[in-house]
Image (cartoon, rainbow, N blue to C red; front, side):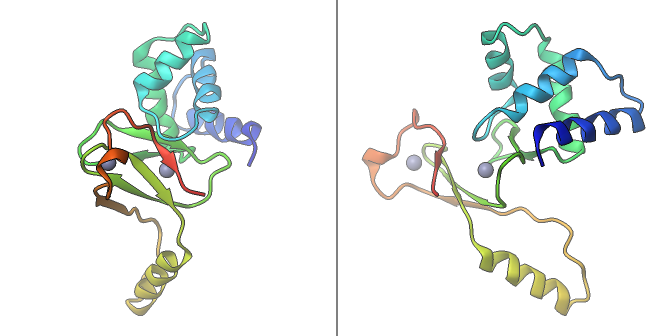
Length: 155
Ligand SMILES: [Zn+2]
Ligand SMILES: [Zn+2]
């Protein structure tokens, strides 16, 4: 899906649910779709301010929730941390490992996991609808584990 299609989905969702379609919400959608990695509402708010886009913090918070409701974004609560979001735009299905010491988030893909879950559901006459997996670990090498480390990605 491209950004235009996400915009259409979002506008349709707002209409159906009686939310106003405002320029501010559309600007937030555009900015959120261009975010890389996992971000929280304040990250997006700060980025938009940096881009000289005027929005209110409260609108950023509730627009991200709306985008989560219509599945344009995925919301994660990593270990009691603030809610973080990530865009579905251009992303493959992936899982997260979080370091318990430095909160670094490592992404990985694994086709076997989904296959196993599909099989488990099938055996129990269930249809898999959604799932989320978070793995908690700690960095093996202390020098690679630090509070300042950014999200890193494994390809
Ligand atoms: Zn991710
Ligand atoms: Zn670590």
